[in-house]
Length: 439
Image (cartoon, rainbow, N blue to C red; front, side, top):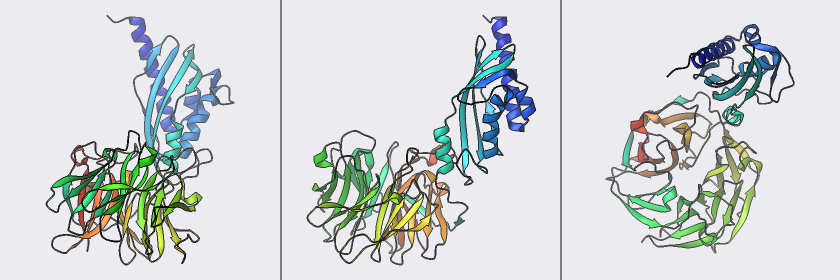
């Protein structure tokens, strides 16, 4: 049974909310101010009167001049209105101290409005400002050229599967790691796969099997393992017959992510907490380099810091996903770290592969692209969501059965997505090992 007073109050609330949203979208600050009482306040702001309602929305529109908000039906409780709103815009102006980078931003918020005589007397906002600032400061690659290459799915995994690492074997097989399973799968060229190795890593957001690098002697590979048990946390040696043992323990709290091998046989481990570890042939770890370029954004970072790592021409290249950087670090004659420099910026890279000529093939995870970076700095997207690259996390170079150069890429099928990202059709949201045919 409907109560006329309740229906009337709800209708009045929807009318007020519609007027508020219309005024904000039109930047009609006079109309917005007319909705406020003379003693209106906004929680946390120093203004009294109409400016208490105008100021926060004016700041938002100055930062996002093309913002368009929509509101859901209001919830009315006596003289209190709760309204949830959302919208999208491109940052063209400062938001507080955050400079514009041209980021597309999703705005989500809820306001609790207290009324007096039909006007807004107080406002308490619950806008998600953390996510707003994260979006504004995320890596922004800008407009990239496209050089799309033929792409084929080798094998699919059932979602939710977070494929994290990929390594090409010496018999045409490919090894992949579904992160949270603590497993390594061996995949044959025809798409058949089998579980090759498993480690009990425990439960946790970072726990599981991560990236791999081939052993210098050709007998298997090294594998990064994030484990709850300190005795299992670090680098494992996996032999060609699928047997594994801990090789180097890393301290609790570290996040061993990417892994590479130097010409001298040392291992370099990208630790997403902000450093690179060096592990010698005896399994002894030391911090090789700790630098601000290897850490994420303080307090607001939503991606890993140091992530992928590869070695080329006596230089270690490291991606920082959260800062959108690729760092180049010379390897000194004694194996130590030289002075780091920024090799590329603006690409939120995950793991990557590097060709003999120094060309980088960078996976961008939630940005759903594989980006080629040439030695002269030119960049181009070689595959995206339309080609089935949804949530690419790692890449490895190899050759297929015909001897054709290919880039193997693993994806998570969109398990980790961004609210401001372009929607991906459900049919493409499948974790997979893909093969990209290179020119």
